[in-house]
Length: 83
Image (cartoon, rainbow, N blue to C red; front, side, top):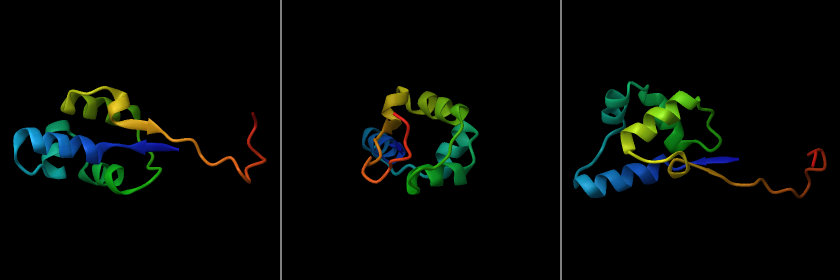
């Protein structure tokens, strides 16, 4: 599963700028839909296109691994997984 770390990037930005950053502010600056950003912040396993990640990397001045982390699923009970 992929874990999106958008909440952490927003917290870092808020700390640096010493002000609250709203999702709408990020949406306006990046051209992304606010609901897309909300899903990345609040939902596990959200589906996202690569251009969204590219825009967020540009906005936050970060690398892809600063936004997304691969977390292996528990393999117990998943005998249908091909290895």
